Length: 118
Length: 110
Image (tube, rainbow over all chains, first blue to last red; front, side):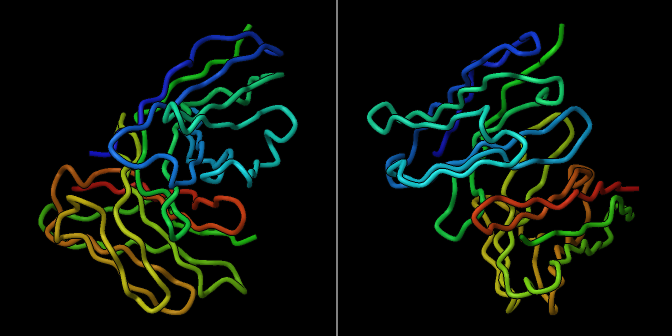
């Protein structure tokens, strides 16, 4: 059974940093690209970042480019999102999602809440 | 970049059928999309992949009541024999060197 478990969320002040993790199991993690997707309170889904299986290709949404860094450790079956210079508008539930071979998310984690507030 | 347009809300009666629409922007009518369901307070769940031909592949455990179809730039999700647990937000998604989500449709089961 595919499982994605996010952790690392919490309350942080504007300008602060946070590192999210996503632990993957139930599939060959090193064979799949992965994504981070977020959802602000009461809003829709917003794609944040993508990383290919070998980390050779990385994409970011314009809203986080230069502030967030996606990475992975295939030996640890883990995905990460380093978030720096956080803003109020980064407040959201952050989901990790497996990227299928046909370019869409086919499994989702349960999410971790990030609250940016003073 | 493609844009996905969804109606903000829809409603239908228990036991009836409903058809939700996701429209691809001009120049992107051949794109594959995915449909996701998000029940209140829960994470999204992948429902199906849907091609421009109308061919679709559902995720594991998705009931037979859920089906997909296409017409031009429109991608449809049809839910038959509506159940109370189908009350949820439904999002379509596509990809073009970055992820793109529609704004979501809130489905109310009356």
